[in-house]
Figure (cartoon, rainbow, N blue to C red):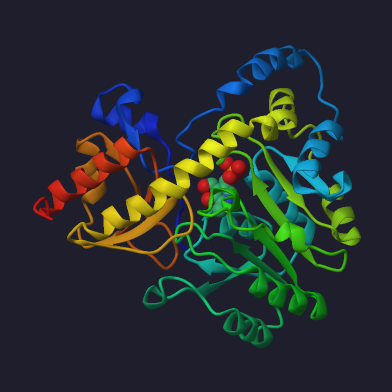
Length: 364
Ligand SMILES: Cc1ncc(COP(=O)(O)O)c(C=O)c1O
């Protein structure tokens, strides 16, 4: 059984139905998706790819792996693809077959669900609000030293919903520990390309000795949660064999396959995304800090966690057609924590003004 039943952000249909308004009128701050939307330069490619629905995709996805590998400056044989980050994550979890795994608390709820359904016991490494939900790698390694039964550590960089980043130096420390002590690291970097100042992926640091699977999502950055595309990278031969054994056949549909082959060509869109985030993320942080009645936590990525004593805040914002993510289902958080995505300048201002209105801090 899960410690808490999970729900996800982004269910705008349900919210619209409840409010009796069209879906387009819901301002969704609950899903952490690139607000620039689908990269329009790729519309033609996508439309042409509809012809692919009449044929099976190549189950080895050579062109897709080549495009991803070129972008990451790695070998295509190090790349595995799937129907979103969640599916490759599930395959990695199945490949590992651990009796015990360690995850952060709070973190993305799917880890616990996916481990649990494999019969893996889940241990939580509890992050502290007093530390802004950051942690010391030495303490985490000490925890692992005390718990020999934990064979897999699953970390998120940056973490969801806290937005905290783990440095490459700390990841190297942990990886060296894992290599030496027969542990394995699953590192979910679904938001690494949506970090302010473009933080470096650990992929560039990987060696063939490293007992590491790195999970990446195309869904967040390219705003394609409905199309679905994710990938996994490892350079370790044994881990590659184990993952290959678990892979589902044709897990990427023909349209997502073609999209993925071309996504890194959308250079203008990629640059615009970095420009948006580098300006709007710090601006929203500053504005949220000025809202009386909430405590916002620092973040490196396209969302913020905040605390507010009003457990009905989500409902009150919904009445203003604004949907935010209540974090009551995260282990380690309660109904007084909320997560909001960074959107465009006008939307961000609207959110902050609505919060001020509800929390009675318009005068600030
Ligand atoms: C940390 C993290 N990893 C993975 C995912 C899921 O990504 P995808 O839609 O590609 O399966 C999410 C979704 O919110 C997430 O927060």
